[in-house]
Length: 233
Image (cartoon, rainbow, N blue to C red; front, side, top):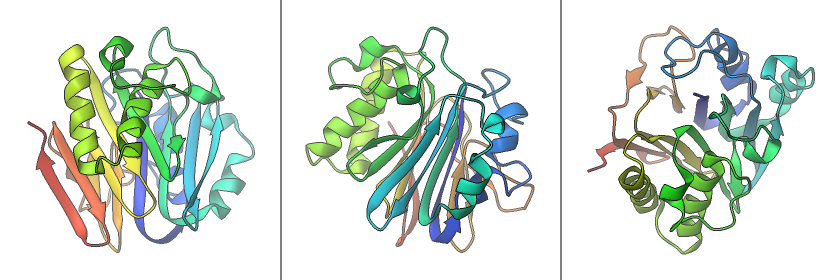
C-alpha cells in the first residue's frame, strides 16, 4: 500500500518524480508494477520541496490523476530535495489531508509505505497530526528528532520499537531534512538509482539500467557526501 519517491541532487521539478517518468508516481497510482499490498493508490497524494531551508507541501485526498492543478504545480515546484507519495489507505484509517504524506515537523518531511498498529507506537508518539497509523509513525520519528537524536539513530529505534509491538508491521519510510534523504526498507520493496544525484523509490520510475534494490531491513542514507546502506538488526 502506497508508493513514494525522493530525490537529492541538482535542482529538479517535482514532476521528475510524478509525471515526467514513464513509471512515475502518477502511473504508479493506478498501475504499480511491484506493489505487494493493494492494487491502486487512489486515497490521496502529496509532494514536498524546499524553498531554501523551509519545506513546502501540497496534499490532497483525491486521486492524483483527478487533480487538474497537480501537473502545473509539480512542474514549477523545483528543489534540490524532493519527496512525493500516492496513498492507498490502510483499512479503517481516515481519508483526509492530515493523513496524507508527506508529514512535516520543522525542517523534516516524512512518508510511510506500509501499515502498523498504533498501539505499537503509543510510547513514542506525541500529538499525531491524524489518527491514521502513518501519522502516528511520523509523530514517533519527529519526537526523537526534536530531542536531538540523530536521524540515523532515530529511524532504527522507531522501526525496532514498532516491529516489537507489531511483528506484522510494514515500515518502509522516507525522511528528509532538505540536505539528506534517509529511507528504511522493512516489509516492502525499495530501490535506488545513482546518477548526478540520488533517486529513492518504492519501485523504479523508469526502465533505465542502474536501479538497485535496497535489502529488506536496511537503512539507506543519502547526503552530499555519498550513499550508505546499513542493516537494521
